[in-house]
Image (cartoon, rainbow, N blue to C red):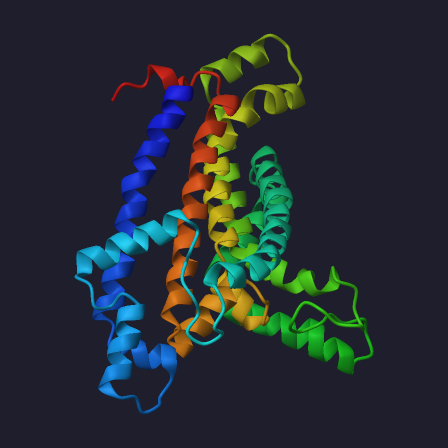
Amino acid sequence: MLKYIVRRVLQMVPVFLGVTILLFVLTVVIPGDPIAMRMGERNMTDAQRASIRKALGLDKPLYQQYGDYLVRLSKGDLGESSRARRPVLSIFADLYPNTIRLALAAIVIEIIIGIGAGIISAIKRYSFMDVLVTLSTSILVSLPVFWLGLMMQLLFGIKFKEWGLPYLPVVNMTSDQFPPWAHMIMPSIVLASVSTAYVARIMRSQLLEVMNQDYIRTAQAKGLSPSAVIWKHGLKNAMIPVVTFIGLDLGAMMSGAILTETVFNWPGIGYMVYQSILQRDWPVVMGGVIIIVFVVMIINLLVDISYAFLDPRIRYGAESS
C-alpha cells in the first residue's frame, strides 16, 4: 500500500508541473499589458514602466520567469490580485470555507438520496419505485443546473413569499432574517441534483450486476436472508464505482461550483474565479486553477486508496504494471 501511495504521489508531480506550464504560457499569450492591468489605466513614462517591469520580473527570459513562478508556488505564494491588491492565497483562504460547507452539504444529499434511491430501485426492480427513480433521474440529468437554480429561486424564494408561505433566501449566505443553514438549502440541492441522479443510476446498475455473481448465489444457497446477502456481500463490491464517482464529484465541488455559486451569489472560490475572469484579474484566476487542480488530485488519491477497504481482493502492492 505504501509503495502504491508513493508511486501515485510521484505520478501527480508531472501532472501538476504540466498545469503550471499551461497557466504560465497563458499569461504570456493572453492579450493585454500586464503592467496596465496591474497599475491601472494611467499615463506612465517609459522609465516608470521599465522600473515596474523590472520589479515584477518581466524583464527576465521566460524560463527564468517560470522558474521564479515555481519557487513562489513552493512557498505558497500565488501572487497578488491586480484588482483587490491582496495576496491571492489570502483571498481564497477567506472564501474556501464557504465552498467547503456547500460541497459537504451537497455531497451528503448525494450520498443519502442517491445511494438510497439506487438500492431501493435495484431491490424492487420493475416496481413502481424503480420506475419512479428511473424517471426522476432521467429528468434531473437533462436539466441545466443554472435553470434549475433560477426556477427554485422563483418558486421557493419569490412565489412562496407572495403566497404567504414559508420561503427561502434567494442569494448570498448571510441574513438577519434567516438562520445560516437556510441559505444552504437551495444551493446545496441544486449542486447535488445532477450528481444524485447519476449516483442512483450507477448504484442500481452495479448492485444488479453484483447480485448475479457466483459468490452471491453461494451466499443465498447457504440460507442467508436477502438483506444479509445485500448488505454484507453485495453492497461493498457494488460501491466501488459509486465511490469513484462520488470522490471525483467531491473534488469538483470542493474546487468551486462556478454555475451554482454564481446563480446564488455564493461567496466561494467558484464565484470568485468567475468574477476574476470578467475583470481580467489573471493572478486570481491562475491561483484558483492551481488550487482546483491540487484538490482534485488529492481527492483522486484518497479515492484510489479507499478501494482496498471496499474490496479486499484489491492488492496495490501486487501491481507492477
